[in-house]
Image 1 (cartoon, helix red, strand yellow):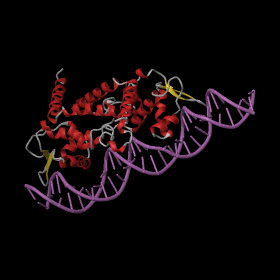
Image 2: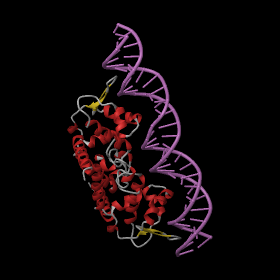
Image 3: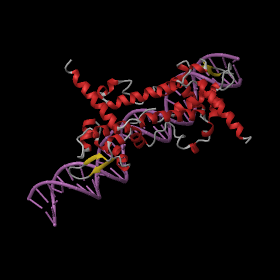
Image 4: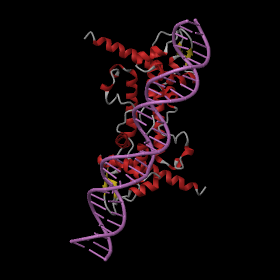
Length: 147
Length: 147
DNA sequence: ACTATCCTAATTATTTTGGTCAACAATGGA
DNA sequence: TCCATTGTTGACCAAAATAATTAGGATAGT
């Protein structure tokens, strides 16, 4: 039950993006630098998000990427689904035909419930929420210096 | 967020084991046959469970494995933790020192909450519960033939 | 002697984590 | 207008790590 680096880096990249000044494109190079991931890898991660229409890319000089929708309309569930292909912990949930035991398998039912729980959780968290959390954390971190 | 085959096969093996007549050892060979897994692979999966004391093995002729504790005292959380090493979706939760951003990272907080949710769910399901579910499913499957 | 687990190693497959390069698009300046 | 610069896109490739699987002999109990 590990989250792939795709999902982790991708989420961080989006969180970084949403925290930049709005209405102007943010360069992947800058996101990569701030988040400490390779630019090339980040490009790989970003591609499905562009295809899915979560972010838009502006090519050429002064280019970059920006959110295509308001941050409060982008859930973590959607992000991870795009980055990892799906949210299911076992593929027999999406594709029952692959396993002859699917219909009679009690473990499958349990994994299915688990997915539902995870999904509900991730569905309820938007990019905006994440940005808010980060802002609060930053503020809390600041005060540490005055102690 | 995929479950490894270790976790999947291992869980199925334990569920198979708990459904056999109690008080006599069940041979791995039989579990492997019923569950469609290679005996060698199953031995690998089983080893950490023996080490952890969830199941006990009896060597020699008429040997096999049996549960070392009552099935209602073995949770899915424990099983998966043993089979996969941990329950955490990201390693920075268990080892914050590995990542310099750990303290200030909002995504980490979210993954941590997610782990808590998953853990609560898996903690609440025991092998006994699983066996019960399977029994009900089997019964339901049977009735189909009479329709 | 037989049977079944145990142990160690080797092999194969898959995923992760990138790198290289050429093409394409927009901008700004000459 | 034309061209150099900046920057993204996409295809292809590859090393490294991890996971999955297979194999064979050692060991222990009946």
